[in-house]
Image (cartoon, rainbow, N blue to C red; front, top):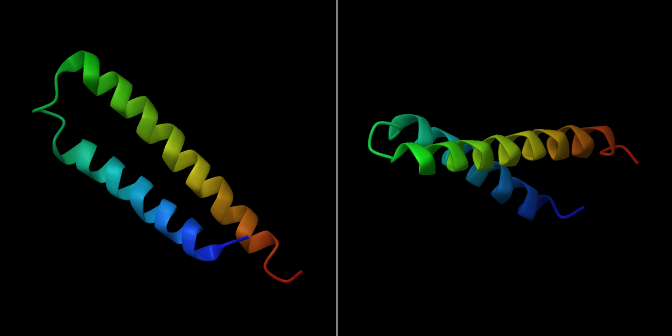
Length: 59
């Protein structure tokens, strides 16, 4: 597994979630729901990939 791409994706996913939380008042409500769902999917997948990388680190 390419760890560089994984690290970049993890940073991007958590940054995207942080920006959405900080700017939630300035985003239109219909767009806010779509962006929040996209952020949740990205953060959950980043967490799953991180756990997988830790589990397969020794092999």
